[in-house]
Image (cartoon, rainbow, N blue to C red; front, top):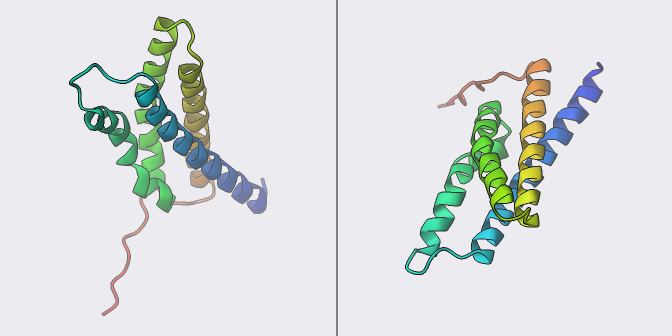
Length: 133
């Protein structure tokens, strides 16, 4: 495989991962307002519980380092489980079906981003920035 082909695959998989990641965040927000929590429950608390596991990874994902992408794959398993449970309990409601499909897409593209990046020689742990004084 040529270096330019590998570089284009890395770029495409990272872009698809980030777009899918943003769509998952948006869909989680929409479903929170579509199906509001029971009365007396803080909407901010529900949103933070839904979004915090994904938002913790955001800085590393934007940097493009590999370790957050690996962790993203693990975290996405929770959201996949949630989507499957909601689909089976709400008569195939289309928003949760879309969430499940997006989770699968992001999982696969993040996994391929890590695979192709390692293949091209990008280290799992980048060296710390050097201090020049």
